[in-house]
Each structure stands twice: as structure tokens, then as C-alpha cells.
Length: 496
Ligand SMILES: [Zn+2]
Image (tube, rainbow, N blue to C red; front, side):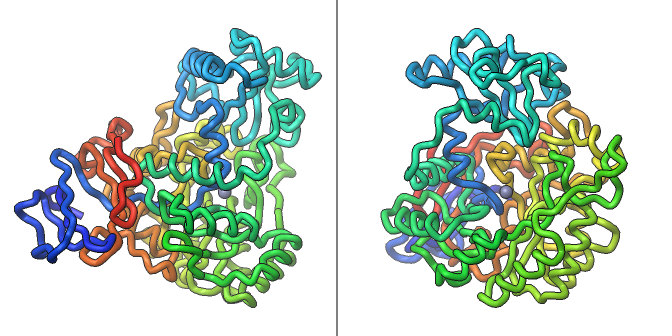
């Protein structure tokens, strides 16, 4: 990717027929009946891919009080107040962020229950590994704030005690949540979203949305096949790998969990967690169950998308995938810590990686306490994976992280976390390489999709228009770039 930015296109039947820096310099000569688009001052790039996102959950969190980009306690308090004013009938204020971390907030401390008491309703802020309540929320849940450490915070495993005071999600609203999640992604320049995992019932809902023309982005749906019940439903569904569900949606790999989560200190690690000499993490599916899940997917002709987070987990999972023989288009989701030799092994086996650059931004400051500076400096060595020849696609796993691809690009190119600290700067990617993680390299994880994520003649007109060219921009200022428009199959699905 070089040369002047693309600012003009000719489209025919939802595909790119000609491209150029301006309408006078389109190449090749546009065909008769082509539609012409011009974005003076803009920069047209291939639409972003998000290789792993929980779309309906993101839609639900979009309706809650959104705190992902709040950088201070005072900003959090303001947003909670605004949300409460805009929702006078809501009995409580549900809030979502990526990771409440003192180092990431201007005040340098955790919010306390009393900080959130200006709103005279229960307020609950949930993130990836904990939740925090204000005084009213803790009282409603019967929790003594002083019994929590820090005050008002409940950690994973306990957090449902507080979250259960929030009104339950409306039943039967999956389609609306899914649609809302996709619109949030389209507004961020995403043109292809890979649903983390869906049940056959949810697939039926997605198929209806596509038939009704209600999908703003392309969707590749991974089928849940991680528990015995899920495998049973998966086998009984009759769904086939790469089967189209409609013009914009199709079935992707089977999703299987292996180990657990870094932010819960349950990723399967070679060395124990700091201060917990007996803890090297935990499995969702131990080696035997995992082999059975791989076999079930293989017997149905599906590649697999495997959730693995720790270094020991990654080596073990890749061994098992080699033994069981996974179909082309199989990949690892996460793979934060990579042991020596494993990336080369993955490349040799054709196993790709769906990675979350924004996790470095949101988590590094906290992870240092869990696994130490050395391991955080080597958290997500994208350069190492790419040098080994692994196809790497980017995602945010939203609403685990902020879904904004520009934040992921910032993290991949600067390796800076929310506190402003830089981690393992030798692993920083150049902007061109980082952009491929959100495009061409991402599409390589899905070789059966028929999509290339390239801005090229004859390819689907899936593109994003930015107000500046990120390739000529200081990565530190990336997040000030604006999204002017998002197009999918030649159709505007978002305009600023
Ligand atoms: Zn996920």
C-alpha cells in the first residue's frame, strides 16, 4: 500500500470497477452504467475486518452506559449522570468498560462507591474481570462495601452477586441486539464481522436479518461447539461449513474453548502467576475433551477456531490440532503468550491467529501484577507471529475491549497501554503491517469465504473512508482520525 490515497471509485453490481486519486484518473476505464463516488480530502481503505466479536452482546452494551473511552473518574461520573438523565425510567444504571485500572485513570485510583452516588439509583460498572457498585447497588445486593477489596469491587466468580440486581435482558431480542451491535461496528469502519459463537437458533435469527436486508456488515458466524450440549446442537443443526445464510452472511469455523482467561489468572501458563506459585491456570476443555471436540468438528467438515490464551495452552492446543488433523481455515483465537517455536509450527500447519491488539492497551498495566513485566513485554508479539508466517487477523473481542479498530491500530503500532506506558517496543508493527491485520491478513483466516479484503478491481466494494491517511500519520494521534463513511457491497452502511 503506497502512493496517493484513493479518493474516487466506480462501482458496478456492488463491486469495484475502477479506482483513482480523483475522478479524472480512474483506472481502468469505468464500464457503462457504473456508479461514481468521490471523497475529496478523504482516504479510501479496504473496510476493516473484526475477526472475533460478540455482536449481540456488543449491541446490548451499546445500550448501556458506555465507559470504554472514559479516562478519568470525573468523566465516568459525568457519563453515568448523563445516561441516568436520558433514561429516567431505568431502575438502575448498567455500565460497561474494558478494564477499571487505577493506572489508566487520571486520578490514579479506583473509583469508590461514593464517587457514583450522585445518581440516586443503583449504578453497576462491569468489565472483563470485575464489577463495581455504588452505595445503592451494594445495598440492593446486600453487600458490605468494606468487605470488598478494593471497596465496592467484586471479582470474577463473585460479580454476579452484584450484577443480578440489574434488570434482565429482554427475551427474544437477540435479533435487535445483533443488529445494533453490527451498526456500532459499521460506524467504526468494520465491513466484515466474525461472530464469536452462535447457537443454531441464533443462526436462524441471523439468517432472517440477512433475508430482510438488516445486516449492515458481512457476517461470518462461528458455531458454538465447545460443550457436549453445544456439540450435540451443532451436529443436529445440519449446518455446513461455508454455507451462505444470505447475501451477506455465511457459516464459519466451529468455536472451541481450550484454556481460560489471562485477566482471571486462568490462562494455562508454563510459569505460575506472580505470588501464586501453585497457579498455572485452568482448562475449559482438558486435553481429552479437547481432542473429542476437534474430532466432532472434523467429522462434520468444519475447521476450528480455538480459544487459547496461555503459552502452555497454546503449545498443547497446537499439538492436539496437529494430531487430530484440522481442516484448512483453522486458527487460534487469542494466543497472547507464544512459546519458542510454536509460531513456526502454526505456520507450518496452516494455523492462523485471531488477535486482539487493544487488549495490550486495556490490560498491560494490570497484567504486569499478574505475570510480571517480562511476560507483558512479550504479550502479543505480532512481529514474531508475522515473521514466522502465521496469518494474523485483528479483532477486539468486543465488548471485552473497545471495538474501535483505530484503537487496535494504535496499540499494535505504539505498544502503549492506557496508562501511557510502552511495553516491549521492539514488537511494535509498522502501520502498513498493522493495517493488513484488519484486512488482507484477516481474510486469510477465512479462505473459504470468497473475500480478500483488497481494494481491487472486481472485488466487493467493501471499504471505509477516513478523513486522513493513517499511513502518513503519527500513530500516537491515530485515534483523532474520523470515519467519514463505510460501504458494504457498494452500499453506504454508515455516513458521518
Ligand atoms: Zn470472545
